Image (cartoon, rainbow, N blue to C red):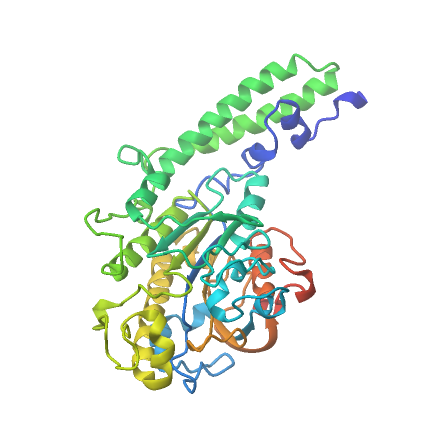
Length: 454
């Protein structure tokens, strides 16, 4: 074959000006959508809130091993013990080791929790702090798109996020603000879905791309020289036509009921904390629906900011000014560090509510059929907080990983960790998603936390 016309699929698409984004369309039908497909893609769902997961300074975490016992605040996870990995003992070394001066407690951890990198501490309020690198959600999303995925890089959602601390960053200093309005986020994900279910939209979009590829291949074949070159392009054409047939065989209206966009209540205000609980449920529903429709494969949901001064869980009976006299605004979640010292029972009540949101997200993922299993089987749900009990600790912080992400993680275990930077968990997420990664954030903190694989 003429050396000037040796065309791999990648070089062929590049020559047509299309780039690698269309490679999966020529290689596999696996990306034809999670709903109704033979095998769903892997996904990441990161859920973050502030003020810890343990009730008080003496409140226990789970016991270790395969037959672990849950502490009171983790009772909502009881039905899912075989679906989770409990991690007790992550260290946010980036906050204690980074140079410079400023807030050095867990109240300033958010800009590094998903980046694992040193960052710029620019104010005492942390509202203008700038992360020192890309966050794992953007890193994974970029990697998926570089490999041909056509959906959103990530879906970033929030509930009552004010201004203190941000989780997601496109690059050092380039923040990704979460969408705190479920109705607006719905429009971003499911725009026009009143007439076309999510899977039908994806199929129609990909059929349109296939038609375009066929046209360009036909035009391109006229520019190549020898018989062997033409045969090579013809083989690519046949691959595309075969994929067209597979798209057609999937048909229209093949979406399972679980893939129908969620019904949101547009009358619920997202301003202030009055409806914090209701908006949280809507955002979880939206996140799961977006993953099920393959509109994105990476979601970050931030519940409050890294102070949570404005978050009052009214459904639990908390009100501004109570229940303890030691703090004038004791009802808000930020003040729970005082509750943890003085009234551990109330801290357990609040922590139990946050654990119930993790359980709801797990249940929702488990309720979506995905190939031979459920969407939880192909997802890694990482639940994190910025401290342990509310005492502003940056070491010994617990986290929860639910779902095996296509068998990558070995669930059903509780791990006791020591000297374990959070970077290792972030690297594990990337590798689980097929984005080969050896270090992430500060390289000094090492590689993947391989114990998560079993």
